[in-house]
Length: 158
Image (tube, rainbow, N blue to C red):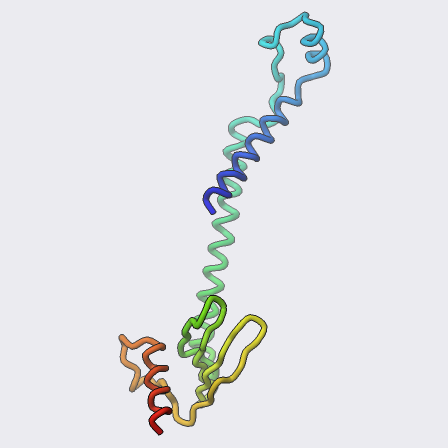
């Protein structure tokens, strides 16, 4: 990722340098070709972009990128707060089953469901008669994977 950013920045700087060199007037080019002036005397009278312009452009780009990341973080946080405050539908936990597959424990009202989520599909794996996870029986250190294994072991036993 960092290499891509460095490559993009380097290519932008290179293209701006080429643009600055192209601002040489046609008279200066003709004089240089005819041998009247040496290459040292041929210069750019008004550079297209100065160092201040480069700095302003890079700082502006960094500000926009940071603003995008900040808004994405804020949106993600607001979504979590909404699910806690919102009421009837909550995600109690999740477990990654593969690169793009997950098992989620969802509570809708008083009903808890185990859902399988994959790209393009959501399937109900099991609807629990009794709540699996409650505030009283959920130890602080246990993870969702441990809770799911305990429930599945109970189902196998009965």
